[in-house]
Length: 503
Image 1: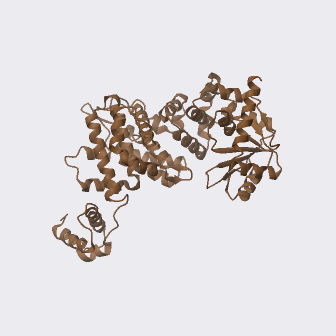
Image 2: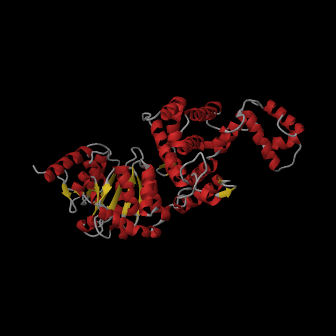
Image 3: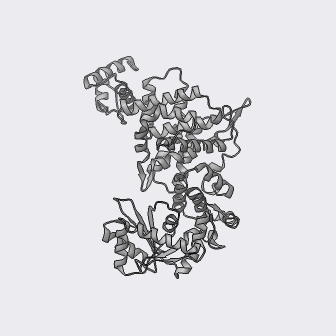
């Protein structure tokens, strides 16, 4: 048996094993019952060859992809979404298992369709409509390129015809560990300006895919090498060459990549990874008790299919975007006054431009605006429960993300020069903050004992900002345990008003 035959034989065995299990077997049965010709193509074939877990299915039919997808969803009680009506592509989502099945119409003949695809590794199709017989269609040597771990554009106009493939190249490099051949890299570089004409939604989806892979800092560097960052994340490109004062020793761009790298490193610890350094071990020792709750926090879905984990990594990318616009040089000293506020505005504007949801925009921009708060708290002469509560109140649900952004920022500043004594101090402050959030408050702000009307009546004051200020102060008193009943709250209000400040 030659190598090519061996590969195809093994692939057939893996396909049969995959479609013997639900919900894949259900999809196969319904497709066969429809009597239409159909193929699996792209990522599912590639992942089977690589022995990677198959999470989604890409099906190819001669025509009527939207109709087939809708019927498949109806027959199996799944959700249906039209993805691309012009190209006849629909998505079927199985809520119980999370499986997504995309059904696409061929663009011309099968050969024409495969030759129009991005990379050879994604241009292998397997016919299933003659099940249990399978037929592998590999006209561009994709199976061999998968084994060679090689990214090769199918055609010379691959990137020009769809510039978003430039981003997909970076994504596959990170997700698969594959390397592009010289021709493919050159073609991508020559076509990068075409990203300006790609829809915001498509760029957003590719950015999310890149963010969700490991080694995001490497991917950001590759985007820079291609010239893509200036087009899709110009605020990141603007950080290059901006100097910083001590204790920083990198420019803002290099520091940002370090913060991204440490964010991922800490998230791997949360996910159960082993410490790789003394600093990692200290983090695990001090904060490990909060990791289960942190994992739950990170897995929250803010928009369909996109989670808090993704937004935390986006915030790491964006946290210092305000520095170029706030750079000042006074008496030889560099300052970035208010960079977190400006950065929050820039992050908000960029994510809106990329069509992220309101929840995602608010989450990331809040993290950027607040990313210095723990740093300022750490340098206070005395850290009170009231100060911690104000931080928790302002951060709200984002607090665990904010904590991990701050820790990554701290390590990204010092890197190999990290002082372990200061690091442990920061970890213990963070532990105190998380303990207050989870154990004292139960991960939620205290419900107000009194209303605004109560405050106006008891304090004999008219409606206005002062009512809100008093309610916030009362909430602080509740949070630190000074007030727990309505009677205590009434007494507190009376003392507050008579004293003109906190009693």
